Length: 216
Image (cartoon, rainbow, N blue to C red; front, side, top):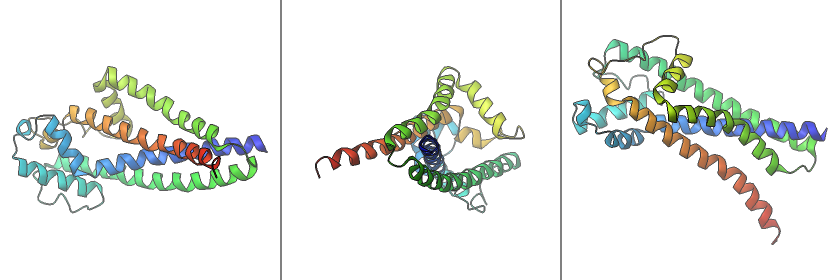
C-alpha cells in the first residue's frame, strides 16, 4: 500500500506541475505586456510597418481574444486566413484552460489518496519524481528547439493544428509581421523561465516547511 501511495503522490505532483506549466502558457499568451516587450526586442513596430499605437492596440485585441473575448478582433485589420487561424488558436487556449483545471483536480485527489496510502512517506522525494517526469521530455524538446527552432516550431504546429493556416506570409499577413518566428522563440524562453521558477518554488516550499519545523 505504501508503494502505491508513493506512486500516486508522484503522479499527483506531475499533474500539479503540468497544471502550473499550462497556467504560465495561458497567462503569458493573454498578456499584451509580454507581447509588447518581446516585439520591441525584435525591432517592432518598425519591422511590422505599423505605428507604436497600432501595435499596442492590436496586442491588446489579441490578448483579449485569447482570454475568451471572441469579439475582441472586431475591427482588426486581419484577413480571413488570419482570423480563421486565430479561431484555431483560441480553441487551443480554451482546451489548455480546461485541461489545466482537470489536472488541478486530479492533483488534489491523487495527492490526498497517495498521502493516505503512503502513511507518512516523505513528500519531497515524490515531488522531485513528478517534476523530473515532466521536465525530462520538455528538456529534450528544449534542446531540439535551441539547436533547430524552425524545425521544432514546425513540428509543434503540425502536431497541434489540423490545417496549414498557421503557415502565414509576412508579405500578406500582418499577424506574422507582428508575431514573427523569433518572437515565438523568445516567448518560449519566457514561458520556460517563469514555469521553472513556479515549479521549483513547490519543493523549496516543502523543504522550507520541513526545515522550519526543526526550530518549532
